[in-house]
Amino acid sequence: MPRGRTPRQPTRTGRQDRVARASVRQGQDKLLPARAAERRKSGAHGASARLKASSSPGSRPRGSQQALKGRKKSPGVSRTAPTSGQAYDPLDSNRIAEILKRLDQLYPDVTCALTHTSAWELLVATILSAQSTDVNVNRVTPELFRKYPTIEAFAALEPEQLQPDVRSTGFFRNKSKSVVGAARKIVNDFGGQVPLNMKDLLTLPGVARKTANVVLGTWFKIAEGVVVDTHVTRISRRLELTQNTDPQKIEQDLMHIIPREKWILFAHQIIWHGRKLCYARKPKCVDCLLENICHAADKTWSTVEVHKNAT
Image (tube, rainbow, N blue to C red; front, side, top):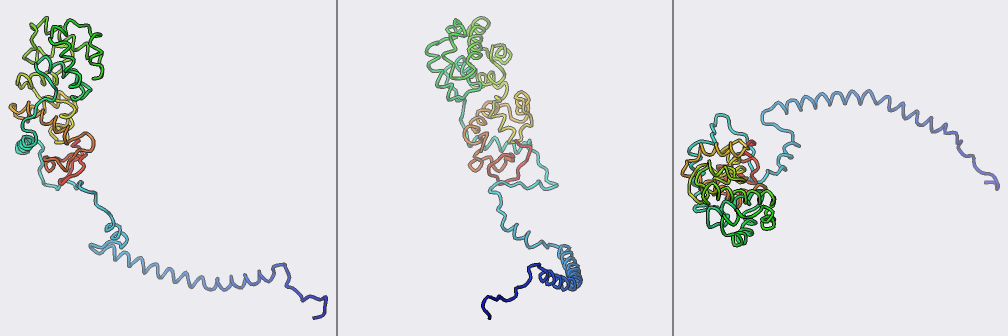
């Protein structure tokens, strides 16, 4: 090649590239109708095959089968719906008897957990237990009763004097007024003796049916009603013994289905059951003797179907 001369280079206008792309496009345009017809044919065949597969009994898409196989069953709790035709009555006398029988096995001789040596001490401890725990109240009352050993000693106090002694139980101002007011009422109207009946007990400051039932049932062994506290409310609803939330209505429901001779013990058993196993959160259903006759919706483990309203 002569020195100083370079070979001719292709033009940079892009004309050759446009020509090449146009030829490729023409070839594709010729192929498109044939491919489209082929797709329509295969699509119609696939749709008919899927229709046949879906209409065959017991068939399921492969992906769904694999998903079902890979799905883990929820541990313990059965959510199956009740079988139609099965008659279930939560208040059936046989079921109630079985509940009472199993409670007797679990808690044969339980009683009130509040420490007391007299009806008056039990009355005071029960007033103090509102919005508190029995453990906390039992830490307060021994020193309280040593400091004020009689009803008359409490009656001689002003509520403000009692407040420091019961502060740790909470709502100490209202509780101090109730305890001092009850002491004065008993001294002035009942000769210094705690009343033996519901009507008179309910006239005492700070005393409602729950407190009165505790005193009458635990100390005097008089079954005037059923103690209904937070444990009894929760567990009675879980066991479908009531659908009410008002304590007085719950008490009336329980009084209709529980034999009177069981009213006192039943309340203590349910309260202990709530403390030991049937917690408000995460109850220990796996350890519960009542598990297979309980259909509570918030069970943590179950061998029976659960009922969404049992809570």
